[in-house]
Image 1 (cartoon, rainbow, N blue to C red):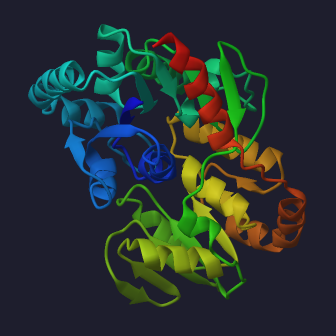
Image 2: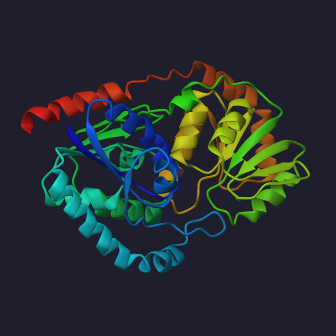
Image 3: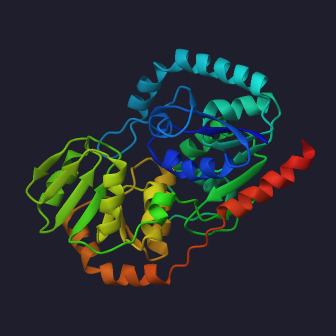
Length: 344
């Protein structure tokens, strides 16, 4: 089957989740990949990729800055028109029979133009297709997320939603545990004497000041520099090094990013999650992380919250021990592909 695969370029999460899916598909299908931003940086090391414009989010004080994001993305509009034209030409020449999409704009739109069936594998689809709950629904961030999700994914043939929690779904959607990279599945987790910290926003300097006040060791990614400061070991991102640190840490502190939370749960690592404010998807992830007992959801990383988290590690690890992970993503994806095939 001829498949076009589109991957969003905001952060590394979409790319790291998509890699095992692409590896699975290329065994029996002809696959063309479209990506921009960090997804292009990551995936282009492994496959030939058509580069397209990637719209980005700007952050300030661990919150999405709507104004700065708008200014940043206005400069990308000329490139967006070129990317759309490039994608249309590629569809015309390649004649795809199916599009699999992880929140990528141009392959979604072009699939609608050419009436090509689409399978969405974006975990953010859960708030459109699932009956979710949050303690206090942040309506403004929810409406923003709903708007952008509708713009990027205007039509769904199928939604195969990766999720580490389960809720009732609608609109021809199915929740499954996310696909994991082989490198993660091969890790043999142990418990070292440090906590792994991963941040999306490089300007969250307050976090570093807070961590220095805690009598504990921290290995930190996200500030893009190699430096040892008291009890903090800052590291530039290196995938092999990151896997090693994830394998041997005693716990994880991060935002509300889906991929790292999922991988941490799989490896039985408790997570302290401080979701990026005004980013609804992360707020949902952090809420359910705490609900299933595998970590804590906090509004701000403080010394007190870190100490509470450390004190409760035994309880979180007990819940993680009982957590059952079912690897059925590819089985469900193959069912969808088979169901689409006779209609081609």
